[in-house]
Amino acid sequence: MTNTDILLEDLEDVLDDATSIPLSKKCAVDVEKIKTIIEDIRLNTPQETKQAKAIVDSRNTILEEAKKEAADIIAQAQAEARDLVARDEITKTAQAEAAQILSEAKEQGDSYIRDAQNQASEILNNATTQATETVTSAQNKSREILTAVNTYTDETLLSIDDALYRALTDVRRIRDNISNIHRKNNG
Image (cartoon, rainbow, N blue to C red; front, side):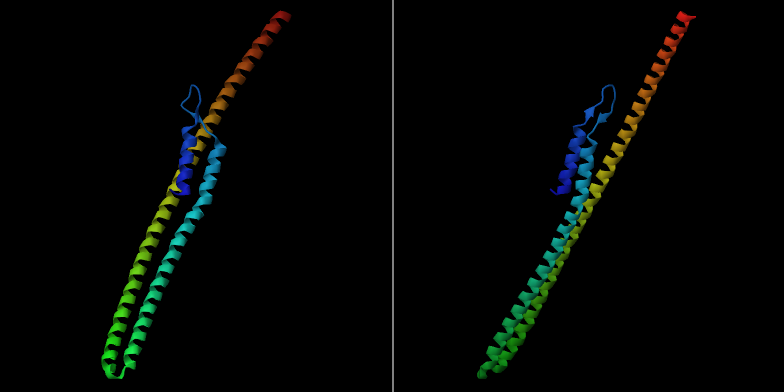
């Protein structure tokens, strides 16, 4: 499980732990916690990119090892060929065998390199796909959460504005009643 997945679960936990507002379908959330988690998601995204780079580096190491192994096989074949040539009585046979060994070694080395390149490409493609999916998922979750927070904030502010308006109206009405009573008593 990646750091981003853990942070997304933390974000869901914050939303699950939201406090219900009485007489309303709304909930209160810790906005600072949500902002912190979103920032952590942004900071972890480069980490997953580094992981993809490490896979690419691993691919290069595999290729280098395959090339080295091919070079070792070729060097070994050449050494064997030189030993065979050194023997006077079997020089022609040795040369033919050496050529065959070199050819087989080259084919085998080329095969190792092709296999290593294919494997490295597949690993890189899988890592790139996974990294892209993770980043896209994190961005989508972040947008959803931000939209939910904005909606909640707007609704809360409207509710507070409405409550203040009603309270102010009540205060004005009470003040007017007091003024009327005061005028009646003085007039």
